[in-house]
Length: 147
Image 1 (spheres, helix red, strand yellow):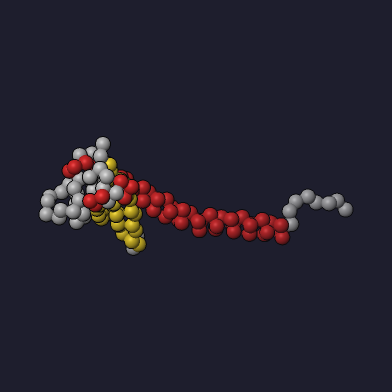
Image 2 (image 1 turned 90 degrees about the horizontal axis):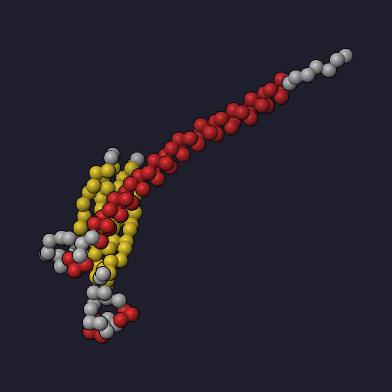
């Protein structure tokens, strides 16, 4: 009797099962990957909004970036500046704070060696938005010094 070449029914069924499991795995993971990609895109866009605001503040002369006087009109004060920016289908809340810092390395207050108790300014930006029913927040900060 001659031996026949080919696959048995059991081999075909096992091959089909392995193929189906791998295809269903890909189908299951694809929407998750798309969701992660969309979230990363949102975070990049929101971070860019914050970075734009930081650059806007950096272009203001140092003495005009004042802190502590809540009655003077902006640029920016310790009393914080808040606004909402529309970004495609998102509404992003931005809160900007400016804190004048007396660096302890040159003394503080009356003991300040250079007599300047406003050595640098710390700028903080909090970005908040809601996407797909989830609240998100990114915090950025930078230091601005005299030029």
